[in-house]
Length: 544
Image (tube, rainbow, N blue to C red; front, top):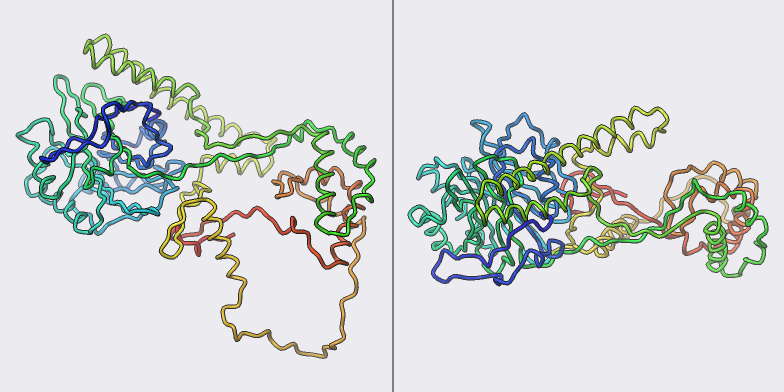
């Protein structure tokens, strides 16, 4: 929530042996969503027209759970997609368009839906998070205010099923509509916690009306040491008089950080190609020859890059996980200001301060909505621009119309036998080993088929000679707009220097053919795995 949370001093146990998992000195600045696995829950009272606000506010959390979504079959999953998250898990109320729960999990985490723990008439979703070090059951619930005793027993049975799995780490969150600050009614949760050894982690009010407050949105855990921090956030939806606050929790295990990486970019539109061709023509390419094919190739490559960098503007940039293009640039600053207004209004409880808070809250909602609409309008305008080529037209279209199966290029954790690969290097090694193995003969007794016809054992292939004019023809037809390979030489450079490089490259190719050696650098490539269908954690369902 962009730091817009109030940390709890620690979970308040509903059992006699009270436990605390975070010290009272914790502050909002100490909560690091980038290193700890995080989750949140929010009663949204209709989600369909609040998706942009919810995504902007909570996209940094790893699990997003929402109750009272008020969805039905007329709303497709594709209309609920969040960038960077798996397709949403949902359970709508079948009888009417109220109630319902919805859950999102970040793409970088592996999980599976546990339908076997979900009782049909209970509004809940269970998932099993699968990490390298542990498995966690995570359940999201909505218990309506008018729940009968038999219906409440079914909710308890649902949680019992999770406990009976034997998985030691269980987290339950949601809106239970039971005020934990009222001893007379909180016994329903307290007795459940005592029987199942659960700890309730939220201690501050989460629901407010005209003249009262209550704690009805809760977090239960079977292992109080699992929760690193928990608390209640600032309400961010336009709920006028009666409103819920989001609740959050951080789990005590480190997650793999999304690393930044360096990329070398060229400003080809500002290049001096006449000067580039002059420099290439003045180079003594014959002096770059070497008996070692790898050294020869390196000399040619380094020379091309050296003269190109002197004639074409270029620089190294750091690529970081970025906000969506419609994300308002001043939004995080406004959220911090809203938090200050909320704290002051809570402290003074004056109509003036509450009005200031509500005004800024509504301004943030409007800003997010207008920014998203402006971005969509700009994309629509770009699509109508006839000057765009087909590639940029399709890129523009795909930027806001994306199939659910291709919403992201990130690779989730991969199953490697009994192990789970979460690190990027481990994922790359698993995929490399799998696709390498596809080229091996599976049976040792397999032999090559017998060749038919008159085949002379003395038949030889005549020498292959590459000529400069052949190289020039190929260089002239290279497609532009393609990314460079590992050697860093872009097609634009090769095409601009097709005449000057035709002879040096022909000599290099002929050296490789006559020596029967292939340069090591030419064996390297950037390979992109593409998900097909099925379980994304299985290497077999990814193609190159």
